[in-house]
Each structure stands twice: as structure tokens, then as C-alpha cells.
Image 1 (cartoon, rainbow, N blue to C red):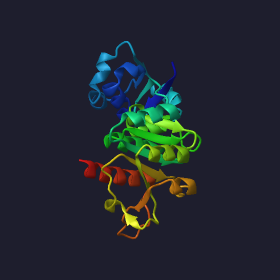
Image 2 (cartoon, rainbow, N blue to C red; image 1 turned 30 degrees about the horizontal axis):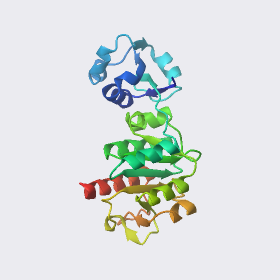
Image 3 (cartoon, rainbow, N blue to C red; image 1 turned 90 degrees about the vertical axis):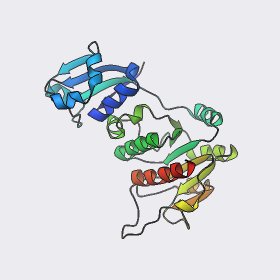
Image 4 (cartoon, rainbow, N blue to C red; image 1 turned 90 degrees about the horizontal axis):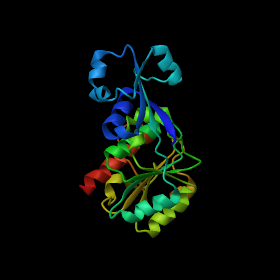
Amino acid sequence: MADRLIYGVQAVRGMLRRCPERVLQVYADEDLGAKRRARIPELDALADRLETVDRAALDRLCKGGLHQGLAARVEAQEPLSEAAAKDRVRELSNPLLLLLDGVQDPRNFGACLRTANAAGVDLVVVGRSRNVGLTPVVSKVAAGAAELQPVAAVANLARFMAFLRDSGVFVIGADDGAPAELHMADLRGPLALVMGAEGEGLRRLTRERCDLLVRIPMRGSVESLNVAVATGVCLYEALRQRT
């Protein structure tokens, strides 16, 4: 059984509340404040899996990461294979999917996973070789969502997009140069939103596989949004329309 480390109060608390059976061991700073500990009442039920350690030991365990006095080793959730992802799509009657084309910053990836989970995304799909993996930093930023949000890693994102189109899923890409604004698109049916990498945007092949390209309206002096922010804007416009 593969396991991995997560750290930070929100990430550990989220895992304890939603999937306590996958928590193998919790490490708490011996000086963890009463106020912070009170925010995590689930710790009291983990006597057999809770280890109190000093700050230096926790720093070493987390390799200098900002752990806030709490870390946990959890049963890893491996990304779905391409075949399993296709099966998942076929099972859904009105899927909402998020495709990330080469997001490399772990903080952006973590924020995208957190927003996807909050917005009810059925599946996040990434390219196996072009996207950052599920690191402890991703887990911390995602505040527990990295361990709960279904994610698939596929060999070729453009080819997977072709499968989606053949399956009746409308594929919309976010692109700063698109003529249509986001709110003009119909996002109510089977939908895959495609977001590009930081700075680079969508790759040519990815862009060509989209049914429609849209842009987020920018009314101020800034020219574009961070990919994690843009993902949140797009997903919640989709959620607004779909509800």
C-alpha cells in the first residue's frame, strides 16, 4: 500500500473529516496550541495513530514545509488511468470535467483541485508528463481536496479531448485571445473546461481540439489572470448556469 505525507492544519483536518480510514499516522507538534488543537476534535479519536513529536522532528519530516504543527501519513490515492477515466466519463449523465494543460506550479495545481472539488467537478484530467504531481505542497494548498478529488493522468491530453468530443462532451478552452466571452457560452450540458499553463496558455494541439474558445472579460488594466483564479471564475460560471 503506497502512502504519502500531507501537512498543514487544513489538509490534515480535511482528510480526518472526510476519509479517516485512509489516515495511517498523524504527527502533532508537542507545542501545538490548545486553540489550534480545538479546531481538530477528530484528533481525540486517534490515540492509536497519533504521535507527538518536537518541532525539529516535524520540520525534518516535512522537509522545511510550513506544517503549522501538524502532518499525517495517508494512504495515497493514485490518479486514474486513461482507460479508467474513459469509463468514468461514460458512467456520468451530465459530466463537468476540468482539464489542465501543463500546470507546473504546485500551488496553482493545489488551488485548482480545491476549487474543482468545491464546484462539484466530476473529474480533473492532466497530462501524465506535463503536469506537476500530487506533492505535499499541492495537498497543503488544496486543504484536503487533493486526496478527495478524482484525478486522472493521461498519456496524451489532445487525444483524450478527441474521445470526449466523440462521447458528446462539449470541450471549451480558456484563451485570452478568444472572440467570445465566457458568459456567452452555454455551459449547462456535458462539459469539459480546458485551462492552459502559467504564462503559456493552451498548446496549439490542445487549442485545436476545443469545440469553442472563450475569454474571461478583463475590465481593468491587468491583461490576464493567474491560472488558479481563472479556473475558479470558469468553474463557477459553469456552476451558476447548471444550477
